[in-house]
Length: 182
Image (cartoon, rainbow, N blue to C red):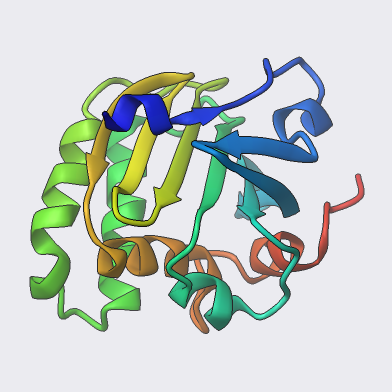
């Protein structure tokens, strides 16, 4: 059962560092924090994101293309982030990374959107965990929401942050090289 393979995460505390512990577990796999940082837009911090991999890696293409366990954690830090704005941002990201050719992953995008149908507020935490042969597991605040099968969908989602046209270049570098110092 896929639910038994979900990521087991330590409880998140109030500090930024505790939102991104040095290790997490995904199924039977230990993942290490590759890096994390804030997503900002117009000088406002919207969320923080952390990248977890099986082994530290700085090559974004290798990470995004890999068919191995990994995760991206997103912690909403602004009350300006709503479900509508999150969906629009993800839609824009999928359009960018696929160069407008969503057809191969459209079913996955539709499933993903359906798993994110609840309101979004500051403090919410999303874990997007890829497990080979199972797909991308979506958790919100530690609660299982669903699974989107397929490596192609995982690659597109991870490339929103890791492609040559990432949503935030500074965040991309932070996810590849360690935590952003405040």
